[in-house]
Length: 506
Image 1 (cartoon, rainbow, N blue to C red):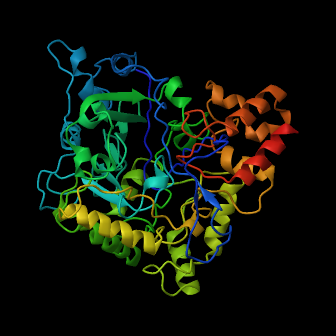
Image 2 (cartoon, rainbow, N blue to C red):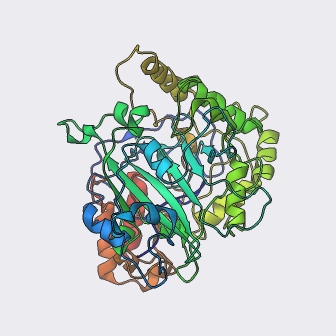
């Protein structure tokens, strides 16, 4: 039973492996941000779409082999699978006499199997048998460039003990993003005393159609039903050597144990939906403008959405033993500085706010010490783009339009550098390689994956052959799974790419 698969908890881990970009990009567009520049500069001249290459899973095991890997007992679990973590226990019941592997047909089925179903859709968050939940409007996680107030991340999880006591029993966290045919899961194994990470992939009927799945299939409630070919992947060497690797954020030091990540772990939880904070109410307002008040979201009943409570997730993370977060986001100090510099914050995010406290977090991340820091302002969206896509979704919701467009392209372009999605303005080639690459290519990560032949923190000792491979990958089309930096996480301009190449030629 090899362990730990893909999840990012909270405004966590930007899985931004480095190097590689399309030599002749076909999907570039001009940035047209409407805000003033901040510490790291204004909008990139060109912005790549946040593409997840279609061939990203070609190196993974087939579903049957992945299931066998998941359900292979080890010496640490004498009563396997019943003494394993929740997801293994549930999906490996076929390894017991008379047992059957479940086949969930949608998100509601999966949540019920994992004990996270909402038993009272008009009840309370984390009470009366309901799971706890929190909704995130900006992330530095796997799908960060696709998470906004219209398409936020929903986290559904086991309620932490109300008395604040340490968690010693099984708990589980599910992360859902619209637009992607997988959910991320963190599951605590009380026998092994470890948090294990998983990605639960699924297909829909649209996968088998000539045109494939549309934005309407993927960005509306259609995504949470009609699942088939459900398969669960552990973080094996094959997965760890793709852009879906979770070591980068959850085990940045391979000599230490994996951790849950929630960078915004302290009030007022800047980018989290909450009826209890100014920023949280602003984000809820933008969400409801598009979705109304009657649409369930991410498995959460519509009547409960305004009860989103990041303090419950923070309590879970702390009580599980992960209260000390690397490069934690100091929400209170940052928001106070923002309001002082731009009184319209958080409702109005143009002009962008200024925060010396945030600038220190950003600079430490840009220098390769930590994963990317969340954005300084509460809102990450361009108000004009947001208004357009809000209207578009409302038209679909009311039946006035048959399809929805790509709703997620609503970021404030002038903020992309500060969000960590593009590099700091004015860096030389080495600085670009450090910010864009070192997060996933350094000597403290798992040295068993071939990606770690390219170590940015040992750039001067790198062989000519390895540098040439890096140059080739910088010139690889972004539709290829080997393209670096993956467009799913980063966008760089042609000039920035050329600076990186020139440095690697030395």
